[in-house]
Image 1 (cartoon, rainbow, N blue to C red):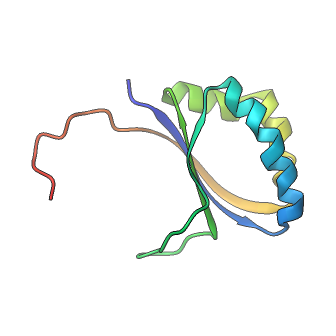
Image 2: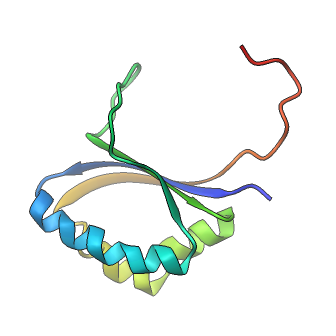
Length: 104
């Protein structure tokens, strides 16, 4: 079964205020078995435009990724993010097939 992912692009306006969101989201993400794959870090945008911070969070499947976002617990935590940042967030199903053509 393919994994589920949150892919977020975030502009943080107030990092001190945003720290409250970071601290609060850990318990919710743990409850849903989430794992950070990308959390900021170095990057270069080669095409198009993007916000300053990129986050990728992995879940065991798409349904779990969606359930976490739609949970009352995350809705509460999100109120700690929105005053201090602007985000574009998508929830997407991963790819779980074997590639049958050569890469590279």
